[in-house]
Image (tube, rainbow, N blue to C red; front, side, top):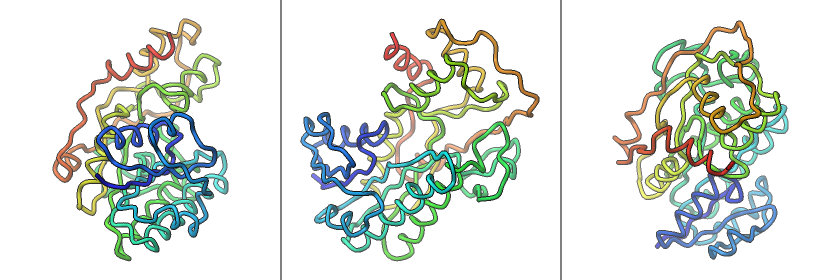
Length: 298
């Protein structure tokens, strides 16, 4: 049994990670802004700690063997996204170093890739990353405040690795599954019904992974010792294919895709490094993921 600290445990991905760790018998500490009854029912300790408070984080990490850093912010502007993603990750890394934590697993995103630079090709883990000042193509979030600051967060994790932390960086695309804070299971469908979804070429590639496959990868990374960055991808469809799956159970959704003249991105994400380094491979299919989302709506 290990003692693991999880950030973002009141959120979609972090909550699933905390539950899975407890299910296999690990002791879990979750740093939170507001304690959760659900986490308390699981027996998760919940110190109230600001994500940017490295000293308080180090105290919470006392006798912790591993950290899963799943907390993230989407913006909307660069400064607010940077507070959570860049500065928050910097504090987590500094706290882990100060507390003598052995392993840090960072949940990142494939949005960090500069798709404009790579074009319609396979996106491997050594592809250039988004940076401030780039213009995001309409087919991706590369260059957005979220993408740029998540790339900056990765740089902080790499710094921790250079200073002695054992690190793993996981890059999932769209994480599918049911949950009140799920981006692609709740928030995007709500925006779709409300007619507030930003236009995106329907033919553009839509990489996805079921949240439980991402959790399996996170636990494998906690147990592993490889210092690696890996894509965690369940499969690929198109953005239009995702919207068609939503229309099957959202009768009030628009019946036509938003018109856009932007060129689609038709590349894919490499998937070979995760099983090679951590011995796990996503197994849930797209239909299973969308069925879970559908059930949460009906």
